[in-house]
Length: 184
Image (cartoon, rainbow, N blue to C red; front, side, top):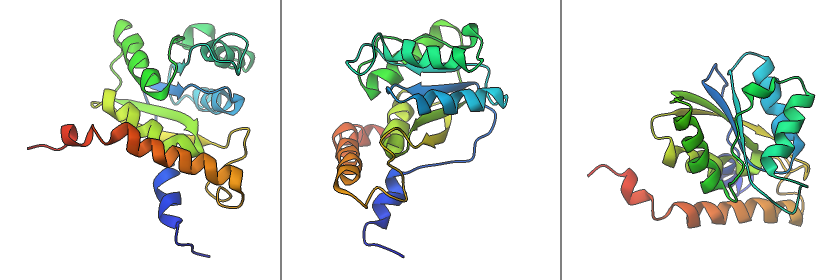
């Protein structure tokens, strides 16, 4: 069945084919599903590193990075394959600080996999594209602990609010970037 809001679903819920990349990036979040998906892709040999990003938050005991790292190690990822960014407090910082970490290590990714919540995929992708303009991103979305995905977001008020809040943030985050993206 089609709905008048199908264009919102198509815009917000991005999923691409996943090919080998230089790094798997996880833009924060206290949802174990994020790191579980990154680990799955790592074990498939799709990238040599996972870079979870995130600082302190009331949702976890330490930092988001440590929370995600511990999941990765428990699932068999060698500690030296999990890069560290443990300061970010929002998606823009996840991206900027991740780029700084990669630059310090001499890693300039031509391809990267972005593992993010399904309803956060558009904003996460656009955010990382701002800082990593030389990188081609593939998006591997996950259904997080809220259960929100492209097939059910419109079925209850709580999930509608998650998606509409993200949609609003896309406009707020990127309106000022658009003139910089247009070649004159």
